[in-house]
Length: 47
Image 1 (cartoon, rainbow, N blue to C red):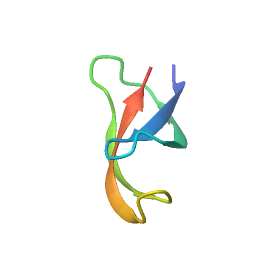
Image 2: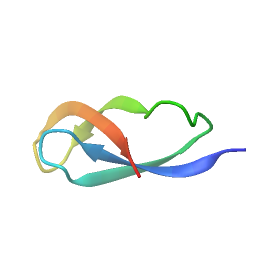
Image 3: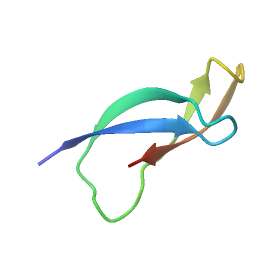
């Protein structure tokens, strides 16, 4: 079963993206564009 997760920028902390994840053991990390930082940064799953 997949759950909806929110991704937050590791630089500024803004929550920019939502996605579906089925892993429960590790937090999802993706490199995405942050509108606040104006750069591609790592975004980590928040709880």
